[in-house]
Every structure is written in C-alpha cells, then in structure tokens.
Amino acid sequence: MNDQVALSTPADRRLLRAYRRLLRAYPPGPRRDELLDTLVECAPPGRRRPTVREVINLIRHGSRARLGRPKSRGIVVLTLFVALAGGCLGAGAANWLGWHAVEPLPTGAEAAGISATVFPGLQVWGGGEAPRVVSQSDGEGIEYGYAVSWVKHTAATRDVAAYTAGVRARLEAAGWTVTAFDPPLDETDVVGANAADRFESFTATRGALGIRFNDYYWAGRPAYDGDGNATYYLWQEPPSWLKTVTWLGFPPGAFLAWMLTGWASRRLEPNPGMGAPAAVGAVLAVLCVVPATLLTLSSDGRADETAGPTWQGLAFAMKIPAVLFGVLAALLLVIAAVQRPPRRLPQWRRQAAQGLDVVRRRPRAVVALVAVASLLTSLGQYALVIEQLRPGSCTPTVPAGIVDPPSARTSDQARVFIDRQATEDQRNLAQAAIWRGLGGSPSFAGDPRAPGFLSPYCAHGRVDSTVAEKLPSHWSVELASPGLFAGLAAEMMAMPGVVAVQHVPD
Amino acid sequence: MREPTFWILTALASAPRHGYGVIQEAGALSGGRVVLQAGTLYAALDRLTAEGLVEVDREELVDGRNRRYYRLTHRGATALTAETERLRASLDAATSQLKRFGLGPAGAHRSGPRVAW
Image (cartoon, rainbow over all chains, first blue to last red; front, side, top):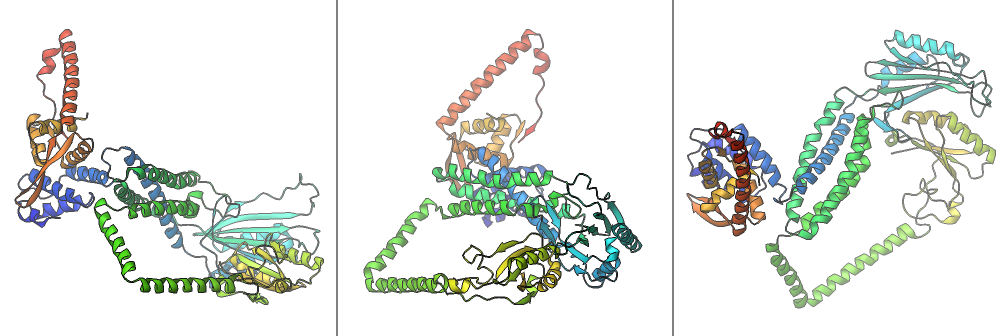
C-alpha cells in the first residue's frame, strides 16, 4: 500500500493502521489505496479509530469484493453454500482432532483391576488397546473404540443368573454404577430353541468409562460350536467439550472456503466460458458435503450401548464427502491457477518461442536429451515388467506360527492360514474355532487364481502358478477388538492343519 | 434502483468526481440526509462500472495520492432519467392522494430522518 498516503495526511497514525487492517478484507490491488484515501478524507479531525458502522461496512463489502463479478448475485449465493460446505468440513476436522484428544482406554494395573473384578481367577482373553473410534460394520453409526475381554465357560459362568449377579455386585463395590439391565432371554418364538439357553447382560459406568457385561450359555451345542462365553466390552465415553470443539472448526473452514472461492472466481472472471462449468463443479462439491453433514447432525440416536450419538462421528461420516469435495475443489483451483492474465500471455509465448529457438540452434543437444529420456523410459518399463508383471517376480513369504508385530497393536484384521492338504473336516473345525475365538464370520480364500488370494504373500509382483498352488489357504478375520488376537491365536494353533495366525497391521 | 445508487448517479451528473467528492455531493444534494459509507460507495461504483452506467474519467496524483475520478456515461444518464421519471410518477400519485383526502400539509413539512449506507 502507498506509504505516501500515510505521510501526507494529518490523520492519526493509529487510525491509518486500523483502516489498513480493515482494508485487508478487500482483495489486494489499487482499490485498497483508493478506499484508504476516501476514508481518511471522510474522517473528522481527532478520530483515532474507525466507527463500528465503518468496520461492519468495510468487512461486508470487502468480503463481497473478494468474489469479484460485481454484477452477479449468483456468485454470493454460491459462495455462501461453498462456505457452508467448508464450515462443515472444518467442523469435521476439528471433530477428528477432538477425538484424538480423548483419553485412551486404561491399560496396565487399572485394566488388570477391572479384569480381575469381572472375572476373578479366570483365564481372560482380549482387552488391550483399541482405536479411539471405529465405524460400525453395518455402517449405521460410530462406536467408541472398545476392547472386548472374554472367558471360556466354567461351571460358575454357566450359571448365568448367579454369575451375572456376582459380577454386578463386584463392580458396584468397585465404584461402578449400573445404568441398564437387559430383560431375561425370551426364546418362546424361536423355532428349535433350547429351553435351557440363558443370556444376561447389563451396562455400567464409572467416570468416563463404560462397561457392558454379557453371559451367553447355549446348552447342548456341539463342542466345536462352543456353548457360549462370558464377555465384557470396555469403552471411553467422549468428553462433554467435544461438541464445542467440533463447532469451533466451522468458522475457519467457512472462511477458507470463502477466500478460495473468491480467488478462483476472480481468476476465472476474464474467461466467461469457464463460469458455468466452474459453477457446476462448485455446486457438485457442495452437494457432496452439505447433505451428508445435515444427515449426520440430524441424528442423535445411539445404535447400541457402545455406539456414540451419530453427530459425534462427524469426522468419520465426512471422510468420503471430504475426499470428493477435495478432488472437485482441487480441480477447480488448478483450473483457476493456470488462467493467466492476458498481459502475461505474450511473455509466455515469448518463452515458448525462446525454447523453439534453442531447438533450432542446438539440434544435437536436443537429440541427445530425447535419446536419454527414451532410454530411461525403456529401462523403467523393463524394470516394471521384470519386477511386477513377470510370473515368478515375487517369491512368496509364508508365515509360520503366531505372527503379531507391534505395528498391528491396534489393528482388528487377522489371517488364519491352513495347510492346503488339510481335510474338509479340519477346515470346518478350524472355521468353528475362529467363531469361538470371537473372530466372527471370516472370508475364506482357497483358490490360488482368485483375486486377493496372493495378497498375504506378495505386496508386489507375480507368483509362479506352480508355487501358488502349494501355498496355504487362508481366512481373513475381522476381530471385534484388536486385543482379541492373542485368544484367537491360542485357539487356532491348537487346531490340526492350521500353520499360522497373523495379526495384520492397518 | 436502490437509493445509494440513485444518489451516486445524481452526484456524478454535474461533474466527474472521486470517492470523497461523491460522498460530499450526495450529502449536499440530499440536504445532509444521505451519508454514504465508503464500502457501500465503491461496491456500487464497481457494479455501476460493470453495468456501463459509470466509467473511470481520469486518475490524478494529488498530494502523493493516486485519486481516481468517475463520470456518468450516456447509459448512466438514461438510467437516471428513467429513475427520475419513475420517482416523479410515484410522487405525483402520492401527492394527489394526500390532496384528495385533505392530508397534504400535515405530512409535507416533515423532513425524513438522516440515512446512512
């Protein structure tokens, strides 16, 4: 900005500084100086700071001037929607940061204390760490990262009512408050149900920790299916400040979206043909974000005890919309960035002409450069073929025993490998053991030619088909919580034919 | 046509003026009733320039300041004339109604409040 304006006027320096700060609401350019000149002339002697009316007026019209296109009202409406979308994304980002400031699940002595209170004297599997938040597998909601702990049935736990009452009494004595108690199991309408089946559960809280205890007893089931188990889920309730933190992300997101839209609008203004396609792109970007946000925010229900109110998962619900919005926004900004003001075009052409002149003056150098580039490209393609596409370019690595790297600590993904020579009975028993080990319903890969079969063995390249046919078949298992891996591995390694159990990093 | 636009065009009808000149002239012509804010003025000037009603007349260096003067275009003068006709028709209609119902003198002496944009 022109310093002479400041020096040649009797206006108070503080007033000048304040006006200059305010005029940053306008896009860079001579208009700022023009306005400063007018404001200084209008200011009565002795004024030291802008009036409230001036502040509001300059911010309002400066924000509008950022969008260019003074005749258009449509650009204001469109930018308001883009700013709304930007605000939603900002809120989502703040929500994500907030979630990562939530206390992790207890470990060490505290976790051991809870385990000993619920299942005193029993071999407990599971527990451990968990991601802060996970989306539910049915896609219906967000759950606080929870850790599942479980025990195989003993005579005591098979007496479901008595054991559940005991757990409840021990937890209450340890400071927990029972918040919900499920009614007794009613299987009167279930065809083929066993009258001796039992199930009881309750939910309790202590501070920000939540716990849900379940005791299932399925009487008379075959051994390979198991007769149920007793489990507890432990999770951390999100703090009360999460909502505030989430909304704090809205203004910066909206501000950034307004500024970027204004910049793109001004860049594209000299090119009338780009106006309509850019507007369509911006509308699509808004449609990617705003409906998803409104849907998330409008639902405050909880899918179950361990699930959060849906709005709290804004960061997780916004992942895909944010990617779509980001791609469209990046495309529009790149198009805006490559627009060149007309006055620079001749210079650009001059540079292009200079480049062509070099080609004319030094043809040998250019030929050598093209030859080197071609050679490098060919070498790259050759390496790609040898390393990636040629059969046998990958020597598969077959895991053995229990593989649980530290990088998989908070992963809920696991694989179980079974010898290709295993009988069908052995495979069925192994699959039942995965169920017993709380591995849910795994997906099996047994055909070496099927897509995905080789991914556990080779990150890149291809495996020779004769080698592939000898590789173990495998199940992909989604654990209910990462800490369940040890229990699953113990259960599986006792099964005939199973050669390895692998905890797969995220 | 909104009132700030009307007064900007009116202020530029007599001579090309810079921003402060327009604000002063609009104030004087309206008997001090209209106080244009600088932000409002330049937003309107941008719009009027884009619509071809106003154009830059010249730039002068005054006391080290680059001062831009604006003037009314032919289209601007036509638009102001049309607006004047519209306002005159409205004024005539209101005046005749007031006279017809004997209310004229009571309201005629009141001057409007000071307005700022």
